[in-house]
Structure formats: C-alpha cells, structure tokens
Length: 410
Ligand code: SF4
Image (cartoon, rainbow, N blue to C red; front, side, top):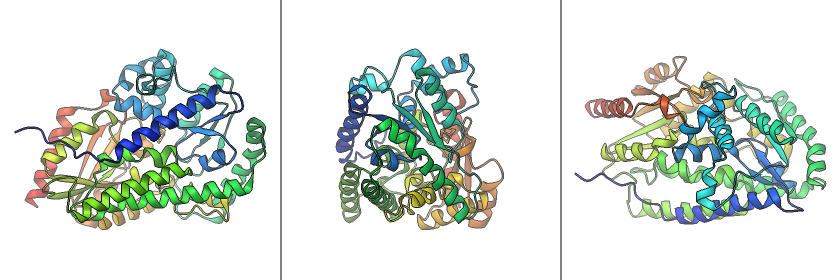
C-alpha cells in the first residue's frame, strides 16, 4: 500500500513568504545603518523590543530549523568540543556548533550569508538557564550587550510579588535598550504592540482549538510548523493576518468535514518537545494508524492570555510567568488533564527529551498519576528535540504501534 501523505494546508504558502520576509528583514537590520537587531528567547520580551524599533530574531527558531533539516546532529559535536556538554540543550549545542562550522539553513532557504548578527541579546530564563548561557556565548564572541530577566521557576499560583518582580526587571532593561536603539520608549507604541500580540495569541489559541472538533482538521505535526508566526512575529499585524487566513481554511475543513487524518479513530495528546528531524515520519505513521495527535503542551506555549495594553509591563510579566514551563507539577497536571478533556484525547504521548529536562514532564511520576486520574493510557518514549543520536526510529515506531493497538483493544 502506498504511504499516506499528510494533507497540505494551503495557507502554508503564505507562511513561507512571511517567514522569508522575516529572515531577510533580520539580515537587513543586522547590517544597515539606522536599523537595530535584537535576539530574543522564544518566550522573552518581544513586545518591548518591537515597541523600541528593534527587528527581533529568535535563535530557538533557527535551532529548530537545524533539527528539521537534520543537520543539527552533525553540528552538536563542534559545540561539545569547546566545552558545551552533550547533555545540555541541543538547541544551544546545534546552534553554536553550526556557527562554529559557518553553516546555517538560512543560506540555502533565503540566500543569507550567515545568521544575522545582533546589536543586543535579550533573554528570559522562564523556560531554562540554557537560553542565557546560549546568548552569553554570542555576547562574548561578538562583544554584544546581554540583558535579560531572571525568572521564577516551579511557580504554583502567580502572585503580585512574582508579577512586580518581573515587571521591575523589564522596566530596568529599558535605559540600556534605549541607549542601543538610540530612541526613547514610546508608551503608546508599546501598548499598540501588546494589543497586537494579545490578538496573535487569541488567534493562535482559536487555531489550535479547531482541533477539538471531531474529526480534527489539524494535527500536532501541522501545529509545529504553523506556530512559526506566533513565535517569531507575535505583536506584528502580519502574524494576525496569517492566522485569520489559516483559521478560515481550517473552519472550511470543519464545514466540509475534511479530517486531517482520514478515518480518525483515536485522538492523542502530546507532552514535550517535537522531534524536529522526525516530524514527517511521525505524521505519516499516525496517518496510517488513523490516529490524530490533536493537542500539545508545546504548541500551546505561545498563548499569552494575560497580555493587556492597559498595563504593558505588568501584563507581560504575568503572561510570561503564567507559562506552563514555569509552573509546578500540581499546576501542570491540572493543565494537561483539562487539555485532554477539552480535546477528547484517548491517551497521552510523553516525549522524554534527553537534552531538555525542562520540557520533559514524565520523569517524576506524572504520566502514571494522570493516567490513573483520567483513566486513559500513556506511552513515554526516549528521544530528543535535535540530537538524533538519542532517538531510535525502530524502537519509537514499535512503541507507537503497540500503544495504538492498546487503544483499539481498550
Ligand atoms: S526549554 Fe529546553 S529546548 Fe528550550 S532552550 Fe531550554 S533546554 Fe533548550
């Protein structure tokens, strides 16, 4: 039987164009007089940077491209050789290794000569410490200023003290950013960007929530591709135009009863990172198994309900502290439970990513506790986001097959 093919989403053509524009703008901002480029972590203070006139570039997006193009595994040893452990974030080691090798997928995809060099590096440790170490490498290498937010971790309820502390750190960054940008922060512009970003977040949530429909018009594997604008262009009108178009297409699928997975029999929730170098293989396997991975912690991480233009600093502080990755296990369990119910998931896939403990939530008994509470089975597999040496094709394929058989038998 021929291999099933994932159904193409037409709006992807628009995404290719806007992502190409994004990278070319970042390249121009890195070299042209009067423009400034800021690097930002994926859940860093992008709204503040846009408001100050920076073009914003996200190295995690670049590192995911290294994974998706399957070049990451070749580059990682170069970073290991200068002291970055194979056990730390393989986004960091792939990106630094590629830089040391003078390679980037941006060369072939967009004709750039290299990664765009920043005027400032801005991090938030809300996701992990690795992002700060990653940016510190480039700060030393290029003698570029490094500023950031030291976040809370393992947060239960997000309190006023948390919000005040993070908002204070964001405010404290402003004078240095103004010096680098060569302009003052315009609060009206800041409010406008936060408003747009709130809209990006709302549209992205609606996009993901179309998958609650049976059959789902969207899979997790589609989501990992279509989340690009929510990550790198949030706060800009172009991202909102994109999600309006995508939503229209997905609603058309719902109206026309077009399923992302023909004959959808089972629905699963995904926790943890994607395996970037195996997205297509996994999408194809689940198509053949008539199983749709309908929702994930990962794709939902770029939903920032708290953003509020009336209080740009405080609402950003709250939005970036309310994130799943920042929270304690009690919160995470309630969140996944709610998601499984909302999306009618029959079971959960847990990805234990070797180099990202921050996004691997299976290590302290959570799958077993949730499985018992929900009465739904789970499968946990060992792998990695970028380092394919930590991933066994055969083993994972067999695990997924056995899991779906178990679902069918139950
Ligand atoms: S959260 Fe994980 S994948 Fe993301 S930068 Fe941190 S260690 Fe890397």
